[in-house]
Amino acid sequence: MVSTSPICRATVLLFIAACLTGAARAEEQPLERIAFGSCAKQDKPQPIWDAIVALRPERFLFIGDNIYGDSEDMNVLREKYALLGAQPGFQKLRQTCPVLATWDDHDYGKNDGGAAFPMRRESQQVFLDFFQAPADDIRRTRPGVYSAQIVGPPGKRVQIILLDTRYFRSPLKQDVNTTEPGEGVRGKYVANNDAGTTILGDEQWAWLADELRKPAEVRLIASSFQVVADEHRWEMWANFPHERLRLFQVLRETKAGGAVLLSGDRHLAELACLPADDADGIGYPLYDLTSSSLNAPSSNFTKAGVRFGNELNRYRVGLTFFDCNFGSVFIDWKEADPVLRLQLRDEQGGVVVQRRVRLSELNPAAAKSS
Image (cartoon, rainbow, N blue to C red; front, side):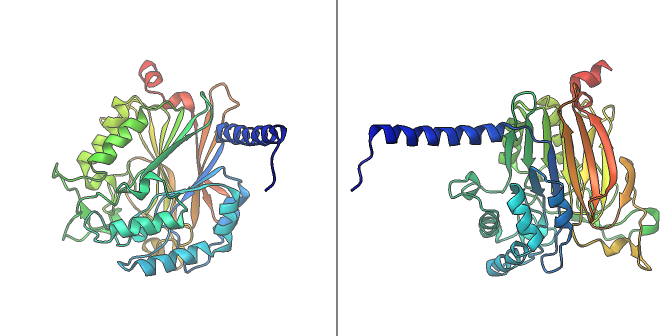
């Protein structure tokens, strides 16, 4: 047996302390580059990862349809996750930055699925295994994959909130009437006004309110489907109007400044904004940055090989982008009034939609005084 002198032990302890201090300091570095995306066909090439890795994001948020599993067989889900894990670009991404994730319907296991999906508990564990959640992660024992973290020092804190819009969601209401795509109305769902229905479920709602009360300068809130848009008839928060209003109410009541919504699902990309003075507004402009798909553009908007579409969205800012895309949020903390660049980027990394927002603009007090 080899003995260790007090001096050696002290040296080792100092080394460990220095490593832990260095890790803590690294974690306290403010986030400046966050990328996100949704809807990745695991059995098709995914060249878009090269452009994402080239941006050197400090976090990547995978916000749903991370694979197309669509199965109650957990072995099938594992095999499809394995195909994603084998994608060379995704492997590079994992070496570049932490990957945080929530799910949407296809990786959950059922198209447009909700709380009625019989394998939701088992699917949750497969999801957590693939995204390398530790054994003591609270999501291992708590229903739902929602999570949150705050990164950065006081004055430059970014809170990342990943909602679970599947595990607790009530049944959708479907309309038998046909729609007229040429008039900008597509989809099959209509509002479910039953006040007893939910998207997040009671426990997640309480958790969200607690998270929003924590101090942070910027809050990136990821929902797998759109929050602000309310005129199309696919999946969106407006399928449950009372839940959409509840989200806005929680943001108002907690006085949570700096909130920006990130969403996916639609196989198109666009930016929407709920104005501060809207009847449902939260006291400052609420942006919803939608990015989808990473490698599977929607055939709904393709004609004669050209992608285009007419879809109503009274809250849209700028144009809709229909090809492969990802989203990014750049934060310039050097400015006295920090600037957020909300961006949508094409497969080569080129910016196709951008909105510059001063952090002071995302402050309910500032909005009231203006």
